[in-house]
Amino acid sequence: MTTGQRKAETVSLLQDLGLKEYEARSFLALTQLSTGTAKEISDISEVPRTRVYDAVRVLESRGLVEVQHGTPQQFRAVSIEEASATLRQQFGTRIDTLESHLEALDFQPEVDDSDQMQEVWTLSGHDGIEARTHTLLENAESEIVLLIVEEELLTEALYERLHDAVDRGVDVIIGGETDAIIAKLGTELPSVKVFETDLNWLLGPASDDEVAISRLLLVDRTTLLVSSFYPDADHDSDEQAIFANGLENGIVVLLRRIISSGLLPLADPAR
Image 1 (cartoon, rainbow, N blue to C red):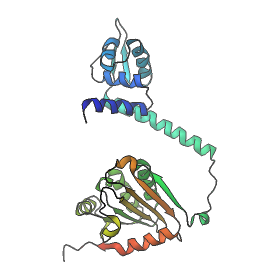
Image 2 (spheres, rainbow, N blue to C red):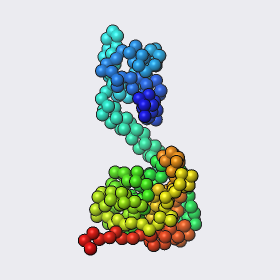
Image 3 (cartoon, rainbow, N blue to C red):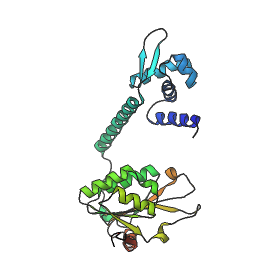
Image 4 (tube, rainbow, N blue to C red):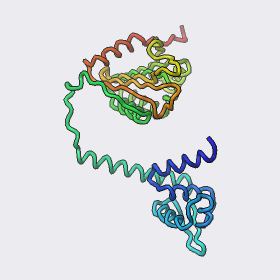
């Protein structure tokens, strides 16, 4: 990634966090200066000088910029650590407010589990699928069976939720598609049952123009999530998943039996 591309992406991320374009560009410019005047900010950011003042006032109100009143005025960005903490707090507060409003409105009717027995739903996008995976792990009550095909899915957030499940007394069984994945799982989760899989015919590998499975999760033997993607596409945006629930759901029953038959205990190195 070039410097120009990194700057453009940084501005985009700041906009995602609630800043307008000129505010984001002005803040980024100030991170490159110890202190700066409106003219210096304008020269670096290419924000019109008359608009810099408006942008900086907003940044000051959000706790991202300090102002020294003089002639000319001097501005400086707070530290990267402080800015990150401030934005994280502001963003988190908005999410908490949104959650409380949604819960207060409570438009969603109660769902009769009997109506879900044969339903299969789809999810799109890596972030949404990751969030659903983590929610399922957090809500597991008795058993988690997780098959990992894509090594990049082995994140600290995943390990944390699996450790929490073990602490709750949930039986956790993990399968790895490659030796590298199995080794990482064994190192990070020494108290968890790690299995090799005999499911190569199901999981891949796939060619560039074929869909590849990236993870397969079965929770409490009743809830199933299977995600997939095209190897030559953008994984983050192109990942897809199916989600099914119900002890008698045909998809869940089928995959439960396939998973059970495909788990092979790792050889005991002491033997």
